[in-house]
Length: 355
Length: 249
Ligand SMILES: Nc1ncnc2c1ncn2[C@@H]1O[C@H](COP(=O)(O)OP(=O)(O)OP(=O)(O)O)[C@@H](O)[C@H]1O
Ligand SMILES: [Mg+2]
Image 1 (spheres, chains in turn green, orange):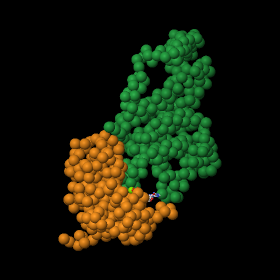
Image 2 (image 1 turned 180 degrees about the vertical axis):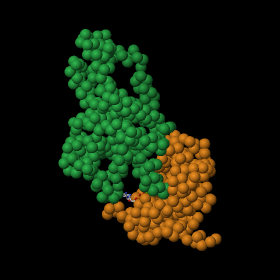
Image 3 (image 1 turned 30 degrees about the vertical axis):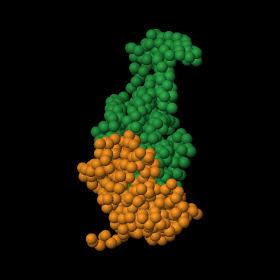
Image 4 (image 1 turned 90 degrees about the vertical axis):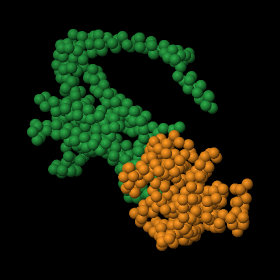
């Protein structure tokens, strides 16, 4: 049995050459891919590089060339990144992005996971809020003028950062032995999951103003944030519940037999194992949520995509939308890819060694 | 010596337990004196596990009383944790925490339940790992140990709580034959040191050597309770005899 497994493994990782043309099937696929690259690559290179305009970043540069109009991105990058935030104040969303991205990168290292990190995050979000909204020495900027990357970042970080602990609580509540708690959690999760995010966003942004008096109505940004947060909580709850179900009864029994109370049992024994089991599913949900933030454009918030669109509306330029969307795609890609790399590392780190 | 020696560590009186319509325990009465070693045996499904799992309330009994060190089991949750602290348990399938090191397995409950400092808990755990003869594995994860080693860690983990009684539910029946002895040896050592033990096992060699009393269960009842000499030489019930002839041959 062992010997056969060994042979299969060795056959599974042959040399590069064998992998490319080892069998007629492989050879055919290699050939097809090579052919399509020959067909696609040259025009792509011509469009993106050879025939493209980069500098000077003025509309005339683009009229002179047949390729990509990168000049537009150079000229408009701050509008795409920060939306219609007042020009003179653009350093503020820039600082917010630097703080949030910097802290995200810092948080990746498991050595940084200490109570201090949570405090740092609360401080960073508070600071971001102040920088974005102004007041206390800064020019006030209403959330209807916010846009672009900081909106995407704040929505993602808060929705997932609060949604994850809430999801864990909901997952535990749904498995509670107390019928009332179980029922409420189930009701919330099932309702939230049964509604499309779009309708939750609409309810939050259009229905709430009809139902609540103006004085206690949170502003548009907050309403979208709450909608995303609730949505993320429900989805993350079900992912975590899946992990909880994978933990054998013996783990609960061993913890209970040692006299561990409910919360210690769950925090020290059950959740650490349950969450590791579902890292791939959690990654998936988080990535979907990162991209879901773009849906806030339907309730009039300027996320990256809508601020890109707004930039494209400038009549002086020949509306180079492919270039703009490629630029936005690249930003989303970096966010999502970065997160999935992080999750991958985490998964390998937390792998329980066996003999 | 003093009064606490007179109080039984565990008393069960008229304990009943159902799983749905099925009755797993029928009016069970049992007293375990301090320092007593009792082996429980009986056919599969006779309620041996259920009996000892009622003592630390991994199963709730419906009728009758269970007292641990004079305190009634099964009333309030606070009481429950206090009782579990005094009752150590070793499972058939070890149930170590796979994400924690051996040492952390042993110190988790002392730190969080008994509120020992990390240093105290570490020292205590290392001493007990020494005693079950695996101090050199302290920083490995359970998955890296053999079954016999894991079960010895599980024993050390329970002992770290300084329980006044240890429950064993078939501690050797998931082990490869060559590892059974190393676990039984640790248990014999415990017995010699005067630990109160309630052991569900079919290892009759262990029963002969360590037990003060052997209990035979059948269909949720304690059918027979006798010293090893009497139990093996002259069992009272036909069922016991049939069972013995089955497992001794
Ligand atoms: N959680 C449960 N739900 C339903 N029935 C149960 C449950 N646990 C035990 N039982 C039943 O109760 C009876 C006694 O079970 P118990 O585990 O105490 O037997 P046992 O004597 O330990 O047997 P074994 O030697 O097989 O471990 C069995 O018939 C079993 O099927
Ligand atoms: Mg059993």
